[in-house]
Image (cartoon, rainbow, N blue to C red; front, side, top):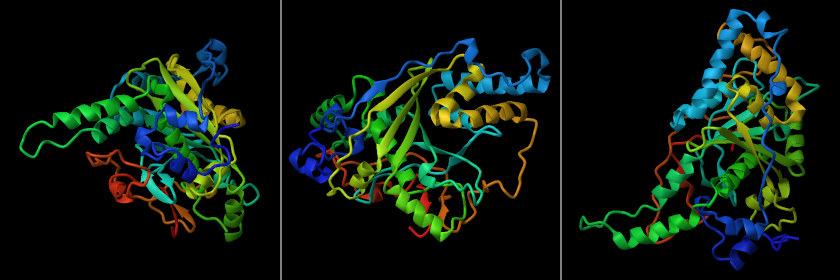
Length: 388
């Protein structure tokens, strides 16, 4: 049993003064205290048998279909080879959200909240899964998979900025503080980037967003449905998946998955509440970029899991057939994709395109979880519940 089991986050912070720090500075020491670990899963096989057949055979495919498939192939190759974070994010969006895909992008970033206060707003893109939204089959926001995309270079840059001292007022270089910050930066830099505790912060942020039922594409929910959704949030386990790329790895994309009990999410919301749940093991899967021809299908299947496998296959086949030649069809049963529309109960904000916020930290101390939310009040969007 974990030594933290049955204790609140407040208790752990009092007993361990080093514990309550900003997520940028979480270390393996935090994971040992919570007994939370990373588990490397078998690398996905890429044999020819795993390549989905989208028709009666390659010879029978039309030239337009081949051209569209080549487009997805070029995008997958660009994702693997480019070193620009913005270009990688654009490539991921095109690979995850072609015409007919089960994914749609949610504008904004998932905030990490502690004690009902926004502590950190990571540079992470959000994707949700769309399902039939009929009165007899209305999905609950807390049960739909939530996906994040993150380029790992963002956290290395954020740490370097946070641990860069101010210039000496007399115009010189602040060598004493620089050496101190270099030691701190070395202390919070993990030996293996794929086991960086900051990735857990991202998964928790996504799980919190799902737990609160925010970022849903549906625009109208009856009051009775919202009440049932709120009650379901108290007992469910949030399933969060995170797609991560790194400019130093041009051979694999990385998928991290975690099932996070609501007891932990409630403990983050109310730090004095005892947490009896076991902290999850983070499952890490490496997904080879090659063969590029079916990377889009493989990464979608890895992210949403086997329960959505059939819809993924159909959606990917439709995507390859209509990526550039067939316009999207609009019917009354299709949820609106206009993010500017004001929903009745649940909506997302539509502020200008987000940019990374240049945070200023005090030279004398490392920021704690109790960072003022004003530090992140500009630059990034946060999905909101109406009336929140």
